[in-house]
Image 1 (tube, each protein chain N blue to C red):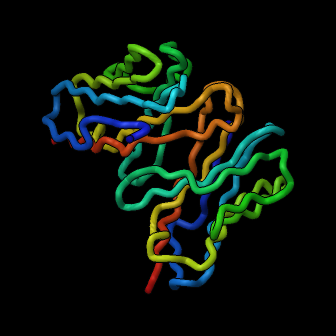
Image 2: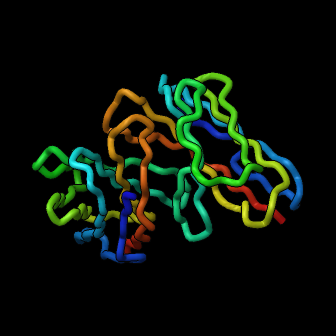
Length: 115
Length: 114
């Protein structure tokens, strides 16, 4: 069974600073997809960034980037120039990419941004 | 326009009651899901439907019954509610042919059982 682990239940960062959230996963598949979702206090689940396992290049979306280490099964999220609006619960998720899209989530990391 | 909408957003009810949560998506997706988020924020899949056909059915009590009248709607009916059913229930949708499989979520329905 695939598992996703986020070892940091809580993280904090100063506004304008950079923070990295960790995620590891376990799979025997070679073709899969990884995601970071953000859940602010509004409760809405928002897709932040996506990485295809077959791509060696790390995905980037504005201030958000990932460090994907396939051999180590590691998928960390880096948030640069942190803003107050980045405060949220962040979930790492894995999908094997077959029909049904069974997205498996990690436990989440609560990010606090201090002014 | 809301892409994935759930109703109601909040639901407070007594133990033993039966309640339903409705979900609709206007994204043209063919696959819909119900996820449960417990008090520790852990998200776990419950059900998934593709074109009205049940394709994922996790270990969920029989009191939970999903129903998909068409590919744009997926409702969740819960019988004989228990205290442990208190959670936030998220509806989501995706396009099966899109291999990346990212989900688009509704805003969640917070169910409180007293």
